[in-house]
Image (cartoon, rainbow, N blue to C red):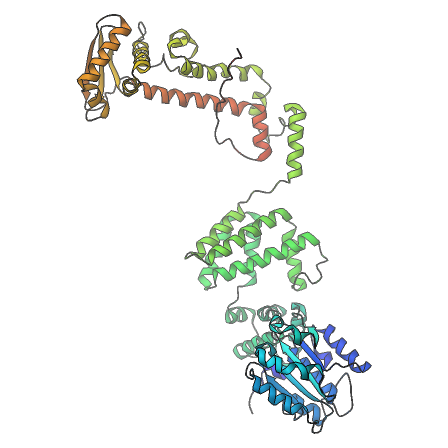
Length: 588
């Protein structure tokens, strides 16, 4: 004897056997009891949710030998023939195979004859959307005014492809996806009747694989029973179906919420070693974080929002208690972005690892209203409110209120700017620039006569007369500088050496030096194979060093400012860069 699969063996035979479609079964039963049975029905919905089964049950209810009844007896010859699919008055037509207008014409010619032995002649057309436009047009008139002994029942998974002229002539019933707990309960009843031992977790995995379809779930259960026999093991079900173990999903979620980066990476390595699809694992994580977000948003009254068992809901409640809804939404956004990028990437594991690491290290979100309130308090209530906020940092707290500690570095930070704007005045302020390293008084170490000042003043004078020549002098080294001797060094092969050895440029430099010093100094250009250890720096090097010192001073001043410290702590940030504001020119 041939084996009958579970999907056929346990096919619903009465309206009470339909799972998850009570709105359809109750309406049809009321129509039969009230004598308001329409001549044409359209059953729409996803695969395996009971459309064709409902059509057969309706046909048996209309043609049962015990009379019109809401619950067919399933014992008379009419019911048994419809169940077996060999009734002479109930025609099950595959719309995908009989799509042409000739098939509809043959059906239309057959309609005029009375049923052979039943009460009604019933035409069940499955996947009716596959009919051609001409076939639909040939059916219109017959469908609108059929004989009294004819009933039409159409079934389709894509109602949007059915012409509106057909839809307007039918009573439409939309079949829903069957909720997961209902499928699990039905599977539990079936395995108990079959004498199979299976846990609720295993049946939940099977039902989730069915994705709301009872037929798919029963087909999957058939496959599991063929592999496991009468004792179903959870690990065997997971391995057979190739689904991601829910424990891995739960562990990954918990590791992300706890910020355990190492655990997250180890879980991804497990997923890879088990051979699971990284993208499928990402899909499961997205569904997990979606469920936690919904549970966090609406509380325990989820209703039909979550297609989960009660045990899974308890686990999610424990996870939701350790986080906030904004943080869940941000992590879910990262997962969605990673899933989209994985579809076009050759490194799906890397994309998933990056996303999970970022999720695990994501700082908690601060509500905008709280930030605005703290900013308002910071602006209107003086810096006293934010100042005590730093956690466990007594040193910065003492630096804040001391006005002398903050006032001292400010002149030092502003003096280099004044010196840049007015270089000739550098010798006058040489004594006040010990900490920020003044630009014009720092070059040499000779105490009696600061030869760097002679060189700097000469370069500025030359730059004012001949800008190109002065710019090249900023990159050369003053070997020996006095009012009677100018010996400057350039690296061998450098552009500056070639430029200054040019007779025209050298004569120009001599004339400008004579004009500046008021004598007749000797000018020598020396080629250097390498920079001597005790060689003085160039003006460009001194300027770079001075700018670095000034930025360091400004940064220290900014870090010590109480308002800046309060803002850093308010936004949980850090000082990336400090920019000196330009001095306002005095009004004349």
